[in-house]
Length: 522
Image 1 (tube, one colour):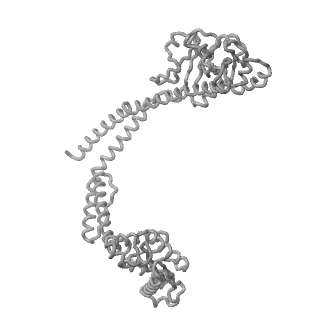
Image 2 (cartoon, helix red, strand yellow; image 1 turned 120 degrees about the vertical axis):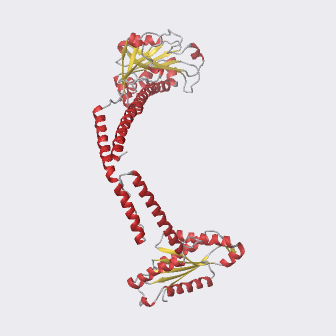
Image 3 (cartoon, rainbow, N blue to C red; image 1 turned 180 degrees about the vertical axis):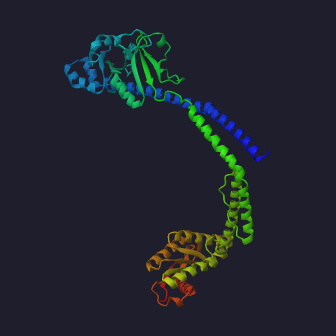
């Protein structure tokens, strides 16, 4: 089969596959997922509205309890006075708390005092009748004889439909503030779910809803109860529920208006445009494939031949249109990186101490060449420290070479940790000796660094009981090379190192675990 025919066959198969894939994704994955998301959001809005209405009712029950369990209200029932009402039950207090009606009843459920907002005064008698009727066993607003006989606080609260509107009610037995004792009567509070309260609840719950009067009919009979908490199963711009009384036919309809109301429609024009774009891109790609397949292979071969001629292996170009060619070039370049890393590792071994992992003497010598060159050419000062582990031969003889190697490694690690804060190099000079080169040449700064190193080694708490010391310690000889020293060309690093060795000897003579600092040339 020719490449041209293969390209045409591949194009046809690819277009058919993409078309089927897009249709499958849209109908079997995208639409079901969006539908589930919209249903979930509508269900959450319903749950939020249910919680908001419940919380609003619960706040009324809390306020009613605070008033009912009150010594002064108990006294008022036994001895009603206008002064008590004026001082403790003013209308403006209930208006501020959004309470639309308050009823105080004695233990015989006889009304003793009431308050009603202007919005309910026209229905005063019917509202009083509503709250004092006992038509069903399952519904009672005022306490029963058994609840009064218990001599403890009891409460009743819920929702009622009154004159085509929804109201909250809460009733609590009136008792002394201790919550126990002789019941004097009961207190009933009412809150009308009017437009103002609906707006407040909408802002609180972040959902939009309305409540309106509804008469029982075929349409309302098919509606679910609002407090049933049944799951929403269909997507709609709004959902309706009913709240009805348990003792008569009064009913209100709760309508929840959703934010997301429908599924997205398939835009055939966009789908066709995308499909045509894919056809164009695939066609151009397949046409270019026949021309671009051989050229990269020729470049690969030339790159390999050039590498064998000059013994320098260069990377291959990795930006190719064909994935297989790009993978080959990537694999070759990765192999080249590993080869270079191995070379770098082998070179590192020549300047890295195999035991401690820090720079060895050879690496130190390479570093000092640059330091001395700057000293000679630019008069840049520096400092050198020679560090020796105190009584290390005794440590090795007593505790063994394995612990000796561990101690040297720990000392080297501690040196690196300290030197990480400064501009310098820490190296193992040989045996238990270490050397540090610092770019700083201020006498006090260098002395502070030396003391920091000495203290850090001692704080390793490596046991080495000798010379009345518990821990392994070091002695440090330091030489500070002045940047203004005359005739610096006649000195080399060995001169500085010898001077540092002399200071190290003085530190050991002084009892070890100390540092001696001197200026080069003194």
